[in-house]
Image (cartoon, rainbow, N blue to C red; front, top):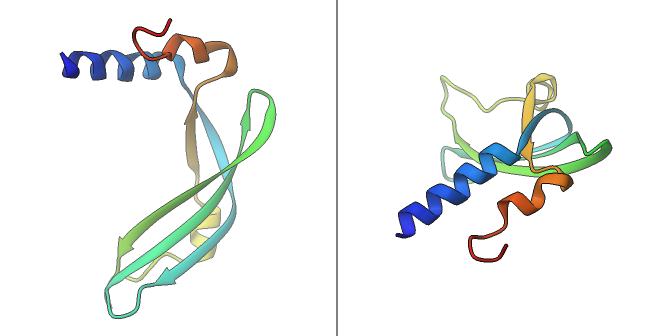
Length: 99
């Protein structure tokens, strides 16, 4: 039963959400001391319902002598996408039983 509920919620979100292109506003790269992992924090700019908005995206990535961490310039030139639910469709993904 919980699996069905989860599937229905995920399906409603997928149908109601949209994907938009974003640009990178800022990047912060921190190699973790004593580990071969780096922490990357990016702030992404995108248009949400016709208004500029930002979102922060954090992730970790492994690196080595042969494969280094990406540079801030590489990340700034990359294209990222943001998925969100437009205001007019927010009610269509309300939790089951609350409509």
